[in-house]
Amino acid sequence: MIAVVLERDHSIGATMTTKQIETGYQLAKERYAALGVDTDAALKRLAAIPVSMHCWQGDDVGGFESMGSDLGGGLAVTGNYPGKARTPAELRADVAKAFSLIPGRHRFNLHAFYVEFPAGKSVERNRIEPAHFQGWIDWARSLGIGMDFNPTCFAHPKAVDGFTLSHRDKAIRKFWIEHCIACRRIGAAMGQALGTTCVTNVWIPDGMKDTPADRRGPRERLKEALDEVFAEKIDPKYNLDSIEGKLFGIGAESYTVGSHEFYLAYAATKGKLVCLDAGHYHPTESLADKISAVLTFVPEILLHVSRGVRWDSDHVIILNDDLQAIALELVRGGYLDRTHIGLDFFDASINRIAAWVIGMRNMIRALCFALLEPVDTLKRFEADGDYTSRLALMEELKTMPFAAVWDYHCAQQSAPVGTDWLTEVKKYEADVLSTRK
Image (cartoon, rainbow, N blue to C red; front, side):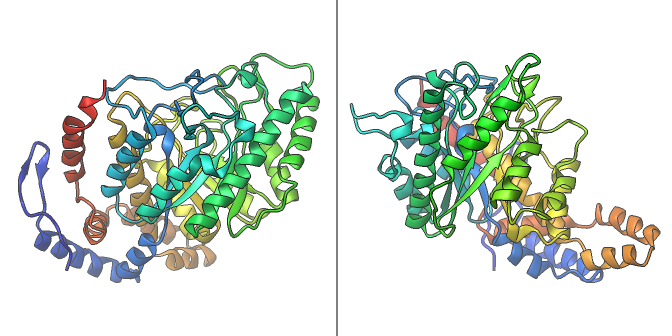
């Protein structure tokens, strides 16, 4: 039996009863079974898919270094909704609250400048160690979750001119190389301590605002720098390396050193993961279409699922065609076991915990929808050249009773059903967030 809070009135709807959820699920189960889909098996598979929730939604990409929070490097957060996390303890509490409202067990993705230094004992970024993240590791262990990690190659005096690993100044380049090496070791320590592989993803802001005269030089320097960063052999059981390309950024509108093509070539020749970020391409490009193309040549990929509106604006993801296309491609291609799914958005115009919950639930909801598709039947139609039946079935699937299966999954996983989670967020806002001045 599933446990659900019994009926009570909410401002946007009443809680469903256990009987209503189970009845709806049984009816949906029969409808899907007629198409050859085992909903129980689909939900079992769904429950085993972790999504990595990103730390930077909780504090507007501020981090906890003592030098301040001058972002630089092409990042911008809009809004000033009250109650953002100001300390590691506050951020951890907010994250734990968000996780409690999301079905399944997931992961947490941390940037390096969310470091915790002992009082008066800070070090530069190229000297950070696993000990500086022990508080995060202990917290993740207490929740039974894994962690992922990222070097922070922005918001720093040595990144103010827009170049890091490809900088023409050897000393600055060396600083960022050492920072990324340190982060790989921290990622490995996280993976070993938590018993689940950490993905350490390298993104740099390097680029130019106007047309450069030399595109070659920075890219050759970046290749050499990456070779140094990845020279140390680390057990992939503990840490996997990923590199993330981008089309452009603020202050780098005309030239991005670490483009998609650059990193794809590097990853394919060096055996690294490529991070595909949903906001890092032309608006008319499909990230879903890139998945099979890239996985033909690299062993695994990392996804940063975001929502760009006219540019890489990192909006909270919604259940739109783009998101569903990504989930469908992962399932249709059999790529779930070769894909690490993470989110990447930051919106300070709304409740930050709600942003996490909306985004995470939508990612999982899209995966749920995809797992309920009769893939073998669709592929058979296609192989037989029966494109009429393929299209007809794809369209009919859009109005199948998917919502009843999703509600049942949430209840099974002891997560709020429907909009019940919003009531919890509003209460947390009144009790906790409102006290932060």
